[in-house]
Length: 103
Image (cartoon, rainbow, N blue to C red; front, top):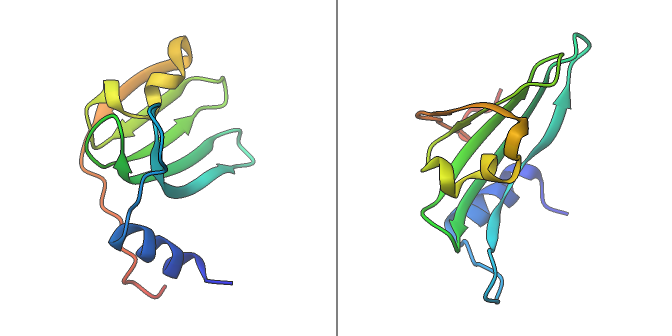
């Protein structure tokens, strides 16, 4: 079994969308990281999508349930679009992922 870094590197270097006519994504992420204080963080990285250019998103839910999405792409083409009214805000920004650091 490949380690997470090798898997992410392979997906980044050779992204392939599944066949089909509907919305499709190829990527990886941290599905959810809950914290004792009630916050949740998540990460999604999609080097290929059928609805727009590649993008990265970081999700944050505060303890009262408000979601904030930070995205590198056009918000209408990113993860936040699937959350509807649950989204408090979407912020377009730079998100850098560095898989070369060993610690």
